[in-house]
Length: 451
Image (cartoon, rainbow, N blue to C red; front, side, top):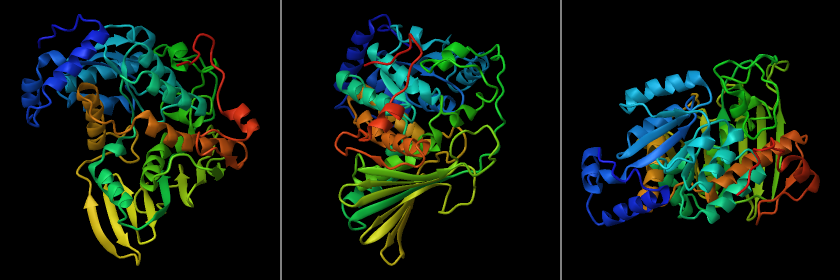
């Protein structure tokens, strides 16, 4: 491969990529990777760094492997065991090993990186995204895009400040052709006036061991894993996903999985910020285990125009109240739509099925890590936005309001299922005590966030 432009400064190479793409815009491009490369040329290689391999990092690497003229320059991992696994997988799907680095702060300074993909724990998302943008890198950040409301607002501000850079949230159903189709039809009136959406997720997650303070594994850089979070002792349940259920790092099921369905619900109803939020939540399973937050939640979001979104989240009860483990139902004055990653079913007001359309992709549902065709399309959309200005499916102006919904629900739950009143124009909470306690967090000195 001819990489004659690799020595150029990042800004110059980005300009070169954009000009190359624009120059080819009028040429008919075949769908195969080989023909695509022959038209665009080898010099427009997009150099990407991937932060985090376990869970979402692996499917993101798989998706990158399917995009022509993309080179994974760095794999960033704070755990040497995951680094080894990532390098082995890279050889299998990419045919080469990227450079290895455990500190993202070093990678963003490199000139052979144009863009960063972030698949690390939730408390790192906004910090790493902002760090990348400050160093002139395009950013793909997994959901939720931020740990709290304040970080959400920083990302919105950064999106405007660094308007020449493309930042996408990993809410991949935004790139589903079938979801795009039915949401457009809802907006056009296929079910009349849409007034309510019920988003749902259910899983049968098991008992979490009660935590014990132990020494961090020798393979893990505990300092870097903690990042901006205030320092604390290592506990033996942090690894293997269970950090999700600790407030110090995790954002609970509403942000962990609910972001996806709440995002599509908000999109379908055409709403942004609610006027009020209330939850009924509790920990109802394995009451004495190491899961410190709710595992069951019903949240109600009321918007202007008498529109409502409800979230029905059951993390540890596998009973499927609705068809499928996750998805949403959108109700309108003249019909309804059942929508999930597998496609959609359109019903009339009597409840008779009008049309069923199955998804043309196979995207993971409740399996850890997920991955599949929607992720492939979403990643390609981000790359195309960088190269030739394609419209992003999930920019921060969409990702942040959806992530806000998950934070409101978490705040309500943590405050005893309190009513959360919201300024629907700005998204800011009205209760000063809730703002003081939950809007932002303290950061470890030296790791503060800023735009």
